[in-house]
Every structure is written in C-alpha cells, then in structure tokens.
Image 1 (cartoon, chains in turn brown, cyan):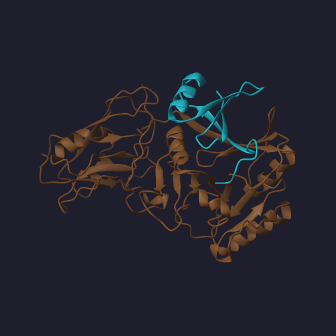
Image 2 (cartoon, each protein chain N blue to C red):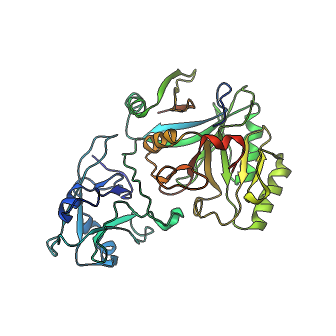
Image 3 (cartoon, rainbow over the protein chains, first blue to last red):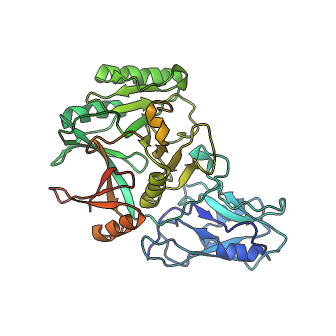
Length: 330
Length: 58
C-alpha cells in the first residue's frame, strides 16, 4: 500500500530497555512518508538528510512495513552495515533539519548518541510547532480522515461567509449546501449552511486568529468590528493579550496577541479552540492523525490543556472543563 | 466545559482518506465516537466522546 506523510512522530520504548539495538527494533513510527511504497529505506531516500545528522557514527534505515488503513504502522529499524550499535550508546531521537522545499519533509530522525546515559523516550517536535521541549507523550496512528471544514449553522450563510471572507482574505464559493471558504493544506475550510439553531450560552468551538504584532492585532480587531463583529465579554482579563469578539451571528472568536509560540507558523486562522475533556482531545488526535503537542496530564501547566496539531497548519486545542467558567478564555 | 444546549452550531466536517465512509465510521466508533444518524443530504453524522456532533462525507 501507499503510505502517507510525513515521517514525523513515533516512540521509542522505555529507556530501561538495556539493549540499544533492541530499542531500535521496537521503535515505532506513526506517520509515514508520502509517495513511497513499502520497504523504502530512509538511507536511500534521504541521503542528504542523513548527512546532516550531527553524529554519523551510526546511520539508521527505516523500513516501513505494510499496514492496513487505521492501524499503527510498525517500523523496523535497523542499523546500517557501516556502523555497529554499541550497547553503551543510548539511542536518541533528534529532529530533522531537512529542507522540505526540495524533498518531502522528515520531521525526525534517529541517531545514536554517546553523551548521555539516559535515552529519551520521546520525540522532539520540530521548532515550527513552537514547542521546543520534548513532549513526553507520543501519538501514534495512521491517518484515515482529514478535517475538510468547520461547518457553521447560519441564519444568513452568505452574509456570514462574506464577513469571514473579508476577514481571512479568502474567496467564497457558493454550493448547494450554502457558502464555503475553501482552505488549504495549512488552513481549514469554513462552511456556512442554513440553520436555525439559536445561540444559547457559550459556544464550545471558536476560532483563534493570529497576529504578527500589536499593531496588526489592533488592525485585525478594527477590521472585524467594521465588518460587523462586536466585542464580547466572556470574563477575559485585560492582561490575557487576546481580544474576544463575536461575528455578526454571535460566533465567538479571538484575535491572539503576537508572540504566541504555540501558534507560530499556523497562519492567520491559527487554531480551533474547543471546550472539552482531555479524552476528546485524545479522540481527535486519533481520528485526524494529528499529533498531540500538548498534554495537560503529562506536562502540567498553570493552564492545563490538551492540544493536537496538524503536522503543518492549524491547531486544535481542548481546554479543561474549568475553562468554561471564564478563566482561560482564549 | 460549556454545557450543551441542543445541537452545536459549529461542527467538524471530515472526509475519509483512502477509506470508504462505512469503514471510517467503524474506525471512529472504535475510537470512541457514537453514530448519530444520517442527514437529509446523506451525510453521516457522529458525536465525539464529549457529545459534539460531527459529520463524515465521502
């Protein structure tokens, strides 16, 4: 079968497995590269990538095994013949620095290391996610659904679509189901369909727009207000750095202040924020094949959240149940 | 979590990748979704573990 992109996220077994080669055999990779059939050897496909690895005493080939859709691909990892694996060498996972403008992206690579006696059992996410620390949780699943759009019930789909079209600088496509703002591989589409559901209480789902600077945030807020948005008080504090607005039909959205490392590189429509449980975050990680990039239980923070993110582009984040009370309202 | 007051006004729209809708429904249900009927336009609806509606279209 064809396997899908990208080579990105995987897990090494616990560091207490003493034998390095055994660790490698048991390593797993979740998402695999686009456009290659099984049995593609990483070493053959990406010599330049491997050449960039800082420690070249060991090159590793990844052999991708055939897996049915929806199953977790197993990856057989083997050392090349050019170097031997030493039991004293802990196995490291290192993010790739491959230039994906010329080749399909590789987000992570495996290399041997000799500096530390403690092998990390996690990937380091690429810097473009804005998460630079190792995330001690590794997501694994094959992609079987993609998020094609966020659909809105609208009393006036065309007017609402026009609002978002102006704000996001996207075209509107009318179809039998209403109005559609097509997305890209980095930006989710928005669909507006006729619906009579009245807004009662806070929405569980809202959009986060990003901004490049304080002035840009001000400009976006002013543009939204001029197009028919209104300020919304959901209990946010002035020092939270984001502006909460409602679109012409009352749908909440926020314009996030500049400098959000988490949303770095996500584009103008940076995030779909959702009230929900950690469990539903894990569900959507599996459903969409988006890696978990922030796990409230394994990486405690003052504002615990669970987040998944497409390998490139828009993120989704789940807030804990307490967020619905008004704190952490971004 | 914000309480639900009827049907959510915002819903995720999914498309299966290299799978038919029925197979993907089975996978999503195994992950924790619940089937939620079929819309007038033939769209398959499900709810996620928090009860949020979403749909799956070929």
